[in-house]
Image (cartoon, rainbow, N blue to C red):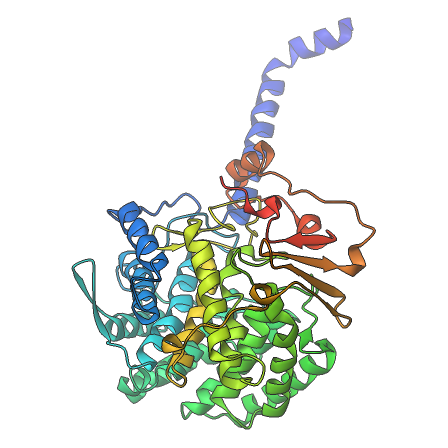
Length: 505
């Protein structure tokens, strides 16, 4: 001990220098690690626009007054609500829409692209249904075409300050490029045909970066297919790309199609992605190119909704699985079936399913600050995936996108609503292909979803967004939300009364 004390005494300066160097090294390593992990724009905050609470209350009161207003009027106001949010949260040059709220692990840049790309198809469908391209939003005049065109041209220009960026393998831009390509096809008469040849070429060049990239082997397979087919329909056919997507589609269908309209969707398996991504994408492929596997698409669509339609009631539907904030997109395949599977879903059933779903969530405050909340009703970080930011939740608009599109042909919003299965009688319907059983109780409008493979599992509760999550986010400047895979996928029963998901914050 004396020798140690003597050594420390005689080497104080060296030890002090060594400690300083060590601390400095640890500090540098920490800063480097945080900088490589941190989500870009983590510390940036987006201010909510003026009078947002008043505007939220106004759309809630208006939309829920079914006896006072027609469906057309109510859905027009709903579109204008989202259009106003799009207008108020634009970046200076219009290529990004930065919504207030939690950002994703992919950062604010990607979230801003999502904000633009996920609203664009709604604007396109609105225009497609012969609605006005210039609208007045809370005393502000808004030109849909001018706003969208400016964002597109700036976002796809590599020399512009708001360029969306180059597309890499397994990049989120691939997902957003599919929505942009689709929206260009839907709005070809209003937007695409107004571009010059050089402007079209610039947009096409950016979109084509998403083709032949490495992708996640699940519903992502349908994104490059959508891009290529949309561009082909717009006059930009590429034999190499056509061959690529034909092979990709064949492999995807052979590997992931289970039967009765259901697909496996790795890594999590069977969930609502069948509705708001897979059948949504297949519907658009059918519309873009009627020769593209129409028999399979329409037959599988019919088989899917034959079972799926039993999930809806006046109290919503039994949510489960990932991406809970996309919940309002769930009626999308019911709506599209009114057009491509009318023998199974009438226009009246489609409208009632859509309307009950949107009414239920609007009643429970799922619309706030000009956008969808990041949870089931209110914001809920227990349910928010790390890959989801504020703009991500606009996938919920997909049921509205198809509704405006279908309305051009049926018309949907002037149809007399028809009661749903749960409003007619009790039922118990089983699907052996996926091992789901849906039970409906007419007396209280309760719907229960039983997942038979989970019958012997214990009951899983949601893990809270805890102090540890907050601390990790503070240190690493990146989302650290609880992993609730077990609660979302492994319970035996999910119901419309399940307080697991309907807790209000």
